[in-house]
Image 1 (spheres, each protein chain N blue to C red):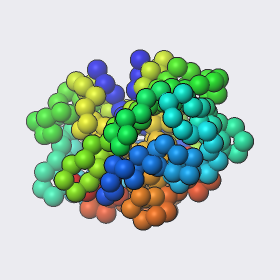
Image 2: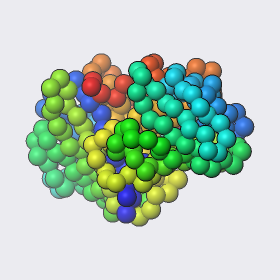
Image 3: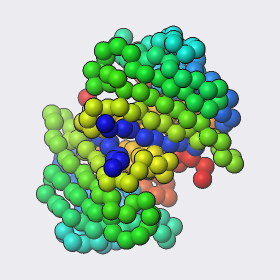
Image 4: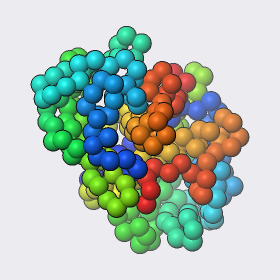
Length: 146
Length: 146
């Protein structure tokens, strides 16, 4: 199984970061502006990019420490059965967000694309928290010309 | 074994991208401004960040298609025996750079940090080629406050 890993350090409290990972309003500040359904364990979050996009069910929440989602639905096909995890860890002057998108069947070009794109969105999360303005879709940084 | 994967699509010819992956002057436009030793297979490239940094030996070159390096030396320890690969693939209006940093012993926090940082430098490579100005160290985007 292949896996995407990232880590960013943010000058923000874990409480504030957790809010941006667990609410529609928070998630829409850094990933995509069209998000609905975020809530407690069992809820299904719909992330939309120009109408299409993945659904994730929330599988684990430890307030201000851990957020886990499981891909729910058929789009995109390569994301079937994959899981996403955000772990928060406070260290001195910053809170680290340790990200994993795991359980990929293979390390494909599409997975590599998603890995780079996740970095862009995690930096958008950092920016949203530190400057007040992230770069969610459709204002996200483009990593190719497709 | 753990692995970092990325992909960016660049509006530039594979010849021009290959130049930025295989020469001191080219590499210094997007990774770090202090680089020496780049050359044919067998040469050892020294990448320096404020004096310290990794060495890589060039292990394979297919002009305008493939660049492979093997970590050479002891710093950083977690990079021992790791390999880096850039594959270039032309598609319609862009050239894709498919990146792998493979053979990591484990998927650690440090590896996750490096994964995010590689995304930043690959976007710097894209920028260097498309706008003429990349963001090599010490002008690189910071992903934490360490």
